[in-house]
Structure formats: structure tokens, C-alpha cells
Amino acid sequence: MSQINREINQYWVHFQSGKTERNKIYPRAIIKCYHDDDFLVQLNFYSEKRTLPVNYHDEKFGLVYLRYPISMYANILDILRNEKPIYFSYSPKTNLGFIRTGKEPVGEGEEAL
Image (cartoon, rainbow, N blue to C red):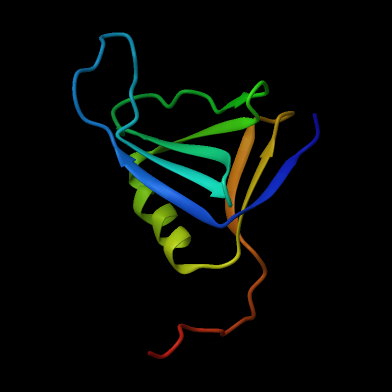
């Protein structure tokens, strides 16, 4: 399979709480990213105390699961809230995924209210 590249135009946030099992690692927070109603990628954020599980591509459902340390949560949420356009890329060959902005003009700055 070739590289996946899609635009993200919607997301929702979920914080996990509750019982954990001894040998399972549960994400502390989840961000699900969509293009319209098409669920593209789930960003899972884990405790800094744990080794991150590997990224995963569920070919049957066409979903990608990217794993990040919880320290990256605020940075990624900031990009989703404040930048446009936002893209998701994933390479099944290297198992690397990205959340990224599109090209922006240098010195654009923030809009005045």
C-alpha cells in the first residue's frame, strides 16, 4: 500500500478514566480525526512512564492509530484548533505518521479580532 495523505477538517477529544488491566496500556487521551464523516486517524496519548505502542494501520477499516506521549497532546490540539488546512499522512512502509499544516505564508501572524 502506498502513502496515505488526507485533509482533516473535524476532530473530537476523549479523556480515558477508570480501571486498567495489568498488562494493557491504555491511552490517557484520544483525538479522533475526520474528513467530513470519514474517520481517518485516531491519535492516542500515553503516560510518559510507559513505552509507546507502535503505530498501527487497520487495513480492514482503513484507520490509522498514531501513538504519542501525553506531553505532545497540547501541541497537537493547538494545531487542530488554530491552523488550517491540516493534513494527516501515514506510510505503511515505514510505519510513520504525521499531523501537519499546509503551506502558509511567511510572517502571516495571527488575525486581529
